[in-house]
Length: 251
Image 1 (tube, rainbow, N blue to C red):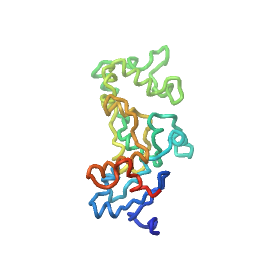
Image 2 (spheres, rainbow, N blue to C red):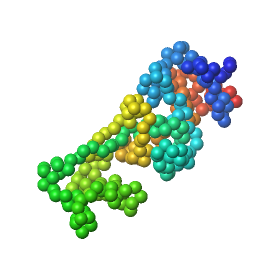
Image 3 (cartoon, helix red, strand yellow):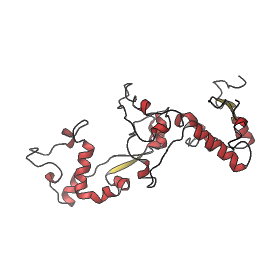
Image 4 (tube, one colour):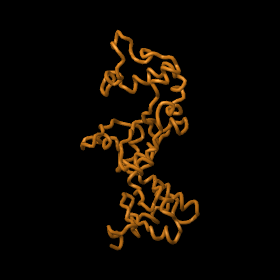
């Protein structure tokens, strides 16, 4: 009980962190009361700490995740198993809500307007749908372009739209909202509880600069070292140099 707080304690006074470098005893009380830190200073993805904070290990893990992600959908939750994806091998995500750390924006369907294309642009049905030698009358695109088809619905629709709007596609994600509504997944989670997101949606570099990121979510050791040592270094006190490990680690 001296090292490990009661499970009923809402904010544990001390936390024992197990690791191969030797156990670390972290004091919430010292940092909150003595140093005046707010919860969100460390739990940076917790926008409303009064409703609870995310544990560091939810987003920052220590082993590859592709194997875990591939298991999603095998428990009857309606989602599909996911294949290998960039960046996930750098950290383990133990809570699917942590996906919103990076996948915080989705594009969803909106009414792009049959009437608008017909009346304003003067297009007939065959301008977008196949000619009569393929389909006697215009059908829904997903009649032929379904999941698992040679050409998916997404690829078929994007290819057809690009016939007229190639300049939009050349701009990348900046033009998606011309045809799709933007969905703030964090707000949706707070409003509606758990919901399905698309973890394969886009590379972060599409929005966040042009240089391909090497690592998006640091593993647990890196995140603790950067946060703790970075803070100590900024105030010039406590352990932050590489030869001061024994000031945090008990081994």
